[in-house]
Length: 639
Image 1: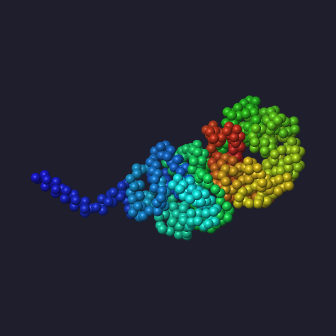
Image 2: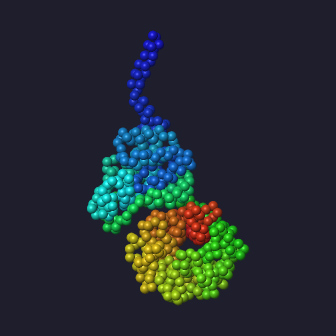
Image 3: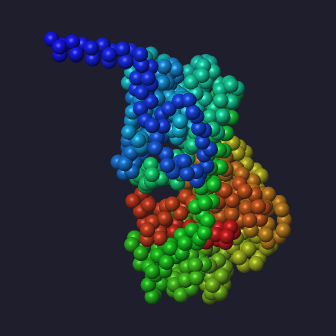
């Protein structure tokens, strides 16, 4: 019986102890890790090089809907395996605003996840600093509010659980919804603004209070808030600031990109009219202000990282590496023997300039000898054969472009045996007064474009022919000043009567228009005129040409964010480096550095540029010498 009494006494004592100390037990259950102790609170200042980020153990990504989170998820799943952290993606989608009790429960739950981890959930900002001594690192992505709302509108119509709704709802366009004043498209609910603002009631709706709190949180609590339109830049920043989580992010994303864009792009998405856009611009005024605030903060952070990355000789090293590859693949007879190379003018016309400017004089002269013997015709033109200029559609369209590259290189190399006949062939283009785009004036070709006029202007400057350069500038300025709708895009061509061409074959649209809001446009088409005008300013001292160059660059910076992460923006990088050198204006230096940094990021181990898995050999071998030249010149502007 004694043992029964003893056990009973022990149970009674334990009950009394536990009953007396139940708060402590609850607290012990709540604060499971050593730094999970109230009420102390430490606010962190974030910068690209803050040691706190490098030591981060816990990351919270409270993802905003329709802002690229599905693509980020795919990258994070790979990174978790590669870098050895736990990736926890919540399956809760419908409760972004939660009670105080649920916030505490969330804090408990996150404390139970072994560090390091990334927690990912559709939820408004929760201030875990109320519970943890050291708060987690917060990340997010935001998107142009109008585009986000349009995307969400059409996305809802693709969901299976909505397919039994009336056809009138399923088939409604966004413009129809706006015209009817539907809450789905014109309601005052906050999205990106709300997710960053937090859990307060006013964060659910667009307004000054939500805007104020969202700005405060983005400054004080978020390490990085990227923008969906520039996802690669977001991943680049993450790699550089939190490498133990994000090392390899860009390498993972690159081969997945095409598939992710196809998989997660909203199906059957319609367009939006300018009238609807104006209505939404008023309704979403605070959302738009917040987006611009976040965008500027992100690019300030990015420019700091890029400036750090470009310190030293990185541009020069990248250029040297590509030049070494090209030189090693030129044989004693001047043939390009790189894998994929063909005996076509397309593979050769940029080579002499790239080799010469890198100091590879022997190889440059060998290639120029080969061009002279193989491609130069009796009339001074350059053609792959008597029958065809080249296999390249674009090089045939911009017929004198390849001629100019060869002649300007030959002029620098003092190879007048190539310069003189080459210039004789081009004289009719000059004398026609129009600088025609796609063939000799004698073939009754009279239409021109801003890119070709700028190219002839650059040839003239190289030859010391300022008078012809000024004539070319008149064409360039005419195109700039006659633009009918810069909000929509930048038209590139003049017809034979020198009127802007706004009607053209849709299949050739990329040769006629840079669409401002469309991704991956041929940005070099406006980059080259900006280069020419900046160079003409240096030649003449006329500030109007500098102003016009800046006008082009300023407009380019309003284009889709893909402009910063597209290799065909290389001439914008060159132009902005020249303008930055002349004016000292930081925004142009930042533009050049952002594009240049991207160009370096797509350089392969062998020195070539562009991923060979997603680009044909012809494009790799044609773009590599040009990028090599521009990086070397940009380096000379800054260092």
